[in-house]
Length: 113
Ligand code: HEC
Image (tube, rainbow, N blue to C red; front, side, top):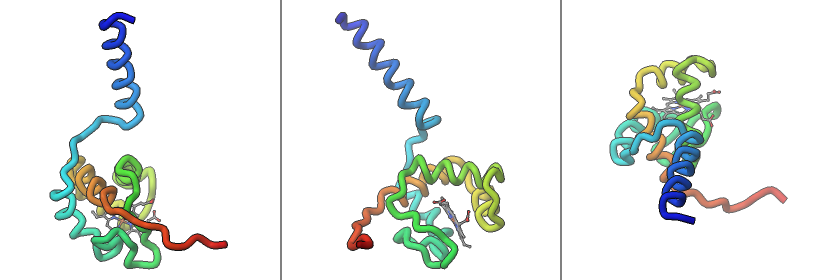
């Protein structure tokens, strides 16, 4: 295989990866921590739910969190509180807060027998 063919393969692979994840925005975890101050009442700074109806966000993949936020923003997913929250955030803030929650490490202590 020539060097040019190898380069082409890499370019194609990069396109496939980009296609899978949508546009890639470099995320800033520290900035995301600031955004998460507005989420903590329900989702916690540790990403563990503080309200019975709010899901845990700790260690969820950023791609999953960004997708959920986009759905709330577009109201493709309806939830009074989250529709308001998602609409108040920029794409950058969503990418950052997703990176923050994704970076939290969790450990499973017990699974049901
Ligand atoms: C007032 C409480 C409240 C606040 C504040 C809040 N959320 Fe939520 N969030 C919820 C509830 C309740 C749900 C479940 C909604 C549903 O049933 O779709 C939810 C769902 C989500 C989901 C979907 C998770 C999944 O697995 O489907 C994401 C992502 C999320 N919130 C992110 C955030 C972020 C980021 C912030 C801060 C910028 C935030 N939320 C602030 C209550 C809140």
